[in-house]
Amino acid sequence: MPKPILVTAGLISVILLLALAALQIHQSSQAREQAEAALRQALADAEAFRATNSVLAGEISTLQEQSTQLEAKLTEASEARDGLLQKMRSELESKDITITELQGKLTVNILDRVLFDSGQATLKSEGQAVLLKVAQVLSQYPKRAIQVVGHTDNVPVRVRTVEGFTDNWSLSAGRALAAVRFLVDQARVDPRRLSAVGCGEFKPVADNSTVEGRSRNRRIAVVVLPEEWVGSDAGAGAQGRATNSTPGKVVVSPTNAVPLKGGEPAVAAPRDGGNVP
Image (tube, rainbow, N blue to C red; front, side, top):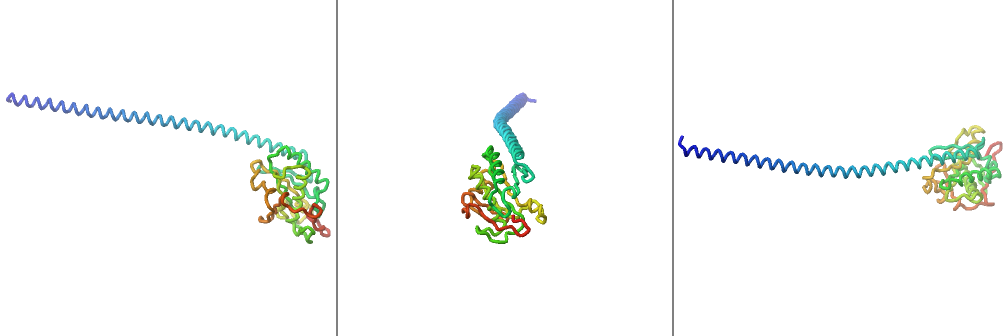
């Protein structure tokens, strides 16, 4: 083969080798740049994850602290409720007065014969003594709202009274209001804690077909509400206006009620051989 051809072939080979080497260097540089970019992104992602984890750790710590505080409050509320229940039972519970607790509400049920003479809405001295004991215990729990709820049996009020009572609703409300007035005026309970509710005959706890059942149904319930209910509609009846909007329930206020003749409501005389609520 002529020498010039060999020289030319050799130069071409050298050029091809240099081009291949340059391509490999370029590709290696791109790979390095890509690798460096991926590393930078990974480092940025890791930093973002660390920041997120730090925030989450702070939130978890806050939630744990709040959970601890809530548990402490629940324990305190439970102890306070148990203490109130025990005090009420030790001071008041008898055959005529029962005390129950359900869903944070403590209820003192007082049979009407303890508080009122048959067919009357004027508190007896015995009833006043009971309400004073109730007020003394409640004075230790000033944040609890109180509902005084009047209940009757299903024996109707047959004669319209001078004060206007014509049915068991108004009679039960009058009795509840008499108890509330006593708690405010004589026992010095804050009226903002109190509401008077009349349920008439519509929430019986016993069979109205028997004398014993009717006797159990004629009662006043002093309901001590949980602290979180203070200021709510459930515990603010003493601030509101009288209403008959809910069937079986009449709510009256000790601050807006019109005083009745003689300062207390009167009701119809008992039926012959029967019991007026």
